[in-house]
Length: 422
Ligand SMILES: [Zn+2]
Image 1: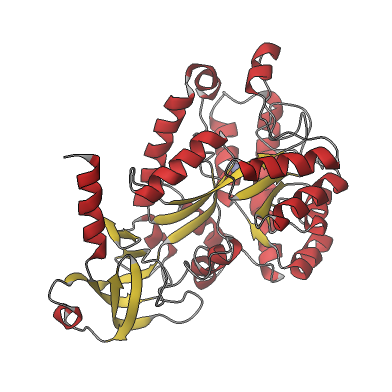
Image 2: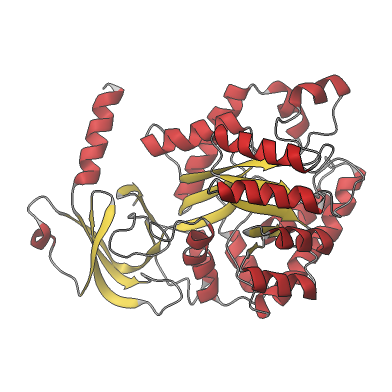
């Protein structure tokens, strides 16, 4: 079969009307679920949500029935922090010099499919090799490969900062240096605009050091206030959101003052941070799974360097412990895992960690749908099962509102009206 033929076949399948009988339907996370509903999908979008189980033929002779009458049905999950091109492990150093860009791109397609099959229909990729991640994003959108919708960010960092390369021989560092490093406000404005020119949907900045940088730079503020401000302003003028990686309080607060749309990790958020979060309306993306994973890896394996190990054990644990304070204070939370630190496809473990930290199940589901869609600026298309939105729909046997672990075993996945798992 030619590619064109298979594309035609798959698009005609999507065009068919599908009628879903949902035993329990959480059409708008944050509100109470409804019993016995019929969701009608046409041309990849939600046509209507109706009371009771209506017969498929009521919606046309070619309409097909999808029986989820014994399942819990909700919008597809959204992960606002993934890295689809890698997976943390003992071979990372070898992979960095042995894998070609093409190898990395092909493997990312595999990680993307694994993520989709786990029920995540949209992800925001916060930094990778840009050209490859844009190709993956566009290939998925065109139906060439199976994966979640990808919002692809470019990463902007200061020279020697968290998103720069490290831990290699100097000549290798020269080859691998990312094109989006900047020092000083004007350079930062320039690289932000360049990143958008080449295809970035969003900008990620490293306002502080990171756990996995192989240096003794710690996790304090790295990017100056004027650099942060220039990046945020340049991105916003061109219609792009900005996510800031940040651990130490002064870096979190500097990013929030500069006007970022989300802070990732926020391990040491203090009273001032909470005040700034609430003033600005920025989201906190907790990535508890990354904290949990690096603590475990530091304790049970030997591939991390000494400074990384020490940071992993300290910062990972603090990230988990400090999350609850921001949640209780009413900071807006959007779901994000930092997958790639953890294994792709285990994204829903984040929900279990959020639950264990004291977050309500209803709020967790909202963070991975309604809130994530809002953070992505896509509330008009994603996050709920309502007329006109993309038919991104998942189902589980039991209700994750009563047992959050139901999310670990998603039985049905539809994205844009196409069924990927049943
Ligand atoms: Zn990350």
